[in-house]
Length: 402
Image (spheres, rainbow, N blue to C red):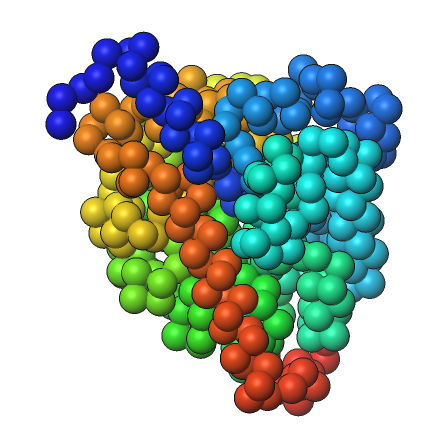
């Protein structure tokens, strides 16, 4: 395919995004709003534009974003009931934000809801919980998060949970415990997507074996391109293809650029030498800020992200790739991808490499809508086979809940 001239290419991408907008897998605006203004959207008016964040409604429009999974993240330093309460506050903030900007945003729970939002000219807003600590080892809590509209759960964040190993903590259970497998099965039954970003490669493999419906990685890239434990190895990408799931390419420099990954690994090593574990957010975060100040992070670029898209397409296939930028969840982003207006630039770069309009439409939202519909259909079928799980971690793993 010959490269189109820039004006023609821009018009082509604009037309494509009008037909098939971006459904991004992960955005941390809600936590940014909590930390900056205590969820006061009078002070952080995303409808008018917010220069202090990567995300606001005008820039989402310019970026061709038609649907967003808003992360209801809480740090892993919060545990037990504190983690649950903070997660509920995040869920509430998501609902309040959508209600405040109801002319522009529409709450969505299903793939049909997403398309209905598009038909009404609004941006579909979905919720995803980032870390199994948010359920406090309780399947009933998991179910109630689903009732409140949470449509995926990332099994861990940066620290292990009692039933699953994180990518950035020392392995304890070797992947998923028996209770962890039950969490996956119950998520399948209720129709909550299993998200394998942040988990160890062994947890990814265990969850792919356990899941009866497609899974996602909401914001991860390819480990073969950038050797970060937060990325998916090729065997996982191949298993993802067989599972029907998808990897939603993230834009975080240390996950897409090898020099930035090495820079981060050095920070982790220096912290460990001082007795500070990466999984200990309370101690690692101030160390990391000081490290960044004295040792600038190598820059990543749009081309780095393109390489991940190309590799995941090659290994997993065009039906198994999406985008999950992680905007407002990181301080630094690749050059040319500094905020949520960047998606058209990524699509133009891929089009120049021969990606067809159909390929790009699968990347933007076609694939994730398919996965959502398959998970929804799987849940309806599984609910005919089994009722709510009453299992506890003490029964299955022989350990107290935490």
